[in-house]
Amino acid sequence: MLPLPLRNRLAELILDSLRDPTARNTLSVLVRFCGEPEDAPAPPELAAEFPAALRKEHRRFRKELCDRALNAWDVVRARALAPAEPALAEALDQAADLFDAGLFFEVHELLEPYWMRGEGPAREALQGLIQVAVGFQHLANGNLEGARMLLQEGSAKVEGKKLEGRDLSGFGRAARLGASPRFPRGG
Image (cartoon, rainbow, N blue to C red):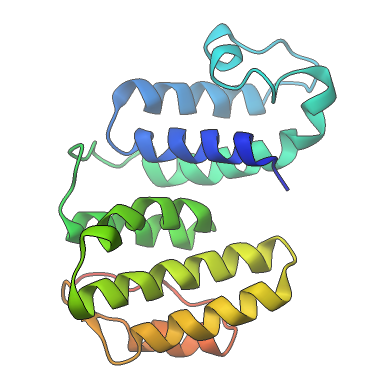
């Protein structure tokens, strides 16, 4: 599991890559670096972005860092740059791609501002989507009890709900059963 500062910085870079060409370029440099031998020196822009991760004693995190970077690159490389604050429908499309790429923490980070501003059933549905994403992150980290609790709570909050034209019920049912659901997409 990535140390929290490294995980958080990578998540920030991934989300910034959805809308910022400089961040997208940095992510592409990270992806290229991941293809180099383990003892290859880091390009200067990576050393500035991830100084702790690239020190010799932190190389044990390289595989997970690179796996997450590669999954993120698959999501962002062909995607048009989004506005700095996309509409909820666009944010949900981004969340769907991130979720389906196994980038559950990033889904949480992406949707949280929309949840904080949300009201009524939309707020509850967003909270449910976030809880399901975090539940799958807990599952990936081996925290089975935390995963079970969040998957149950999140699935209950999305059951019977629609958000921006997306029916969330099937997603909630699959999450409650511990299946690997596809994030609801627009239509």
